[in-house]
Amino acid sequence: MEKRSEKGGLHLIPGFMERIRTDHVSAYAAQAAYFLIMSFIPFVLFLTAIVQYTPLTYREVRQAIIGFVPENLQGFVLNIVAEVFSKSAAVLPISALVALWSSGKGMQALINGFNTIYHVRETRNWLINRMYSMLYMLLFVLAIIASLLLLVMGSRIHILISEYIPFLGNIIGRILGAKTFLVFVVQFLVFVVLYRYLPNRKASLKSQVPGAFLTAVFWSVFSYLFSLYFTFFPDFSIMYGSLSTLILVMVWLYFCMNFLLYGAEINAYFEKQFRQAKMSVGQMIQRKRQEKREQRIRLKEEKKEKKVKKS
Image (tube, rainbow, N blue to C red):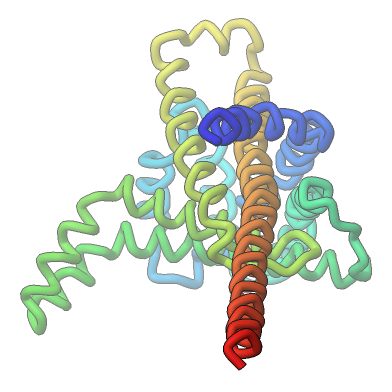
């Protein structure tokens, strides 16, 4: 029994790698990265347009970008943000809607990849599906804005709560001090929602936790190492010249999309393993019940035979 279970455990990794190969995860990651690159500028435009209707100022947004965007990409993003902040407020709603529609294409590419990984067909209407993509992109933007508000205005919230509930204020102060942890939590929650609602299938939020957690870990670690690499090896910009920023974004997004799709594969693979294990446990319980019923029947028959012999 031990050898068999050990063999089954060793077969998990080859089975997972086979799913990655047959589901063409790398191809879908490249497709998603390409469309997200095409959607990147509209996405930043839309995000910046929405931010202007919040208490956040350009200076605070700029500080947040410097704190969380890799140094090689900061100039590119800051130029877009500065230009949107300088535009007339009357034009912003129209520009925001156009940007939201355009950036939804990147989310649509992820939907196609998730449907393939979960082995489901897309039966939703094209227009409805595109509207869903826009809705998910809007929720994604709102999650980013909420995290920015929490990080930028966290000290004000901390002071306000500390005046009325000192004990709770101390706890919130410690949480707000761990900015990296807050960003990780926001990433994790966003990934859970993406895995649950993007594919054309029904699943529980709880079943998406393993893939979302691992994706958030790998995404955060890779982004840190990616930024660290170009700190110590800056020759990349010399090689590609003016295209270096675009190439950097493409490489970073490609790997991050791979991590995102790997997380979906983890959820899909272990959901299948869990269903099989659940069925096996159910069959075992049913077999035990059947054995107990048969045993009771045998005992009754033996008692009847004893009574007949005595009489």
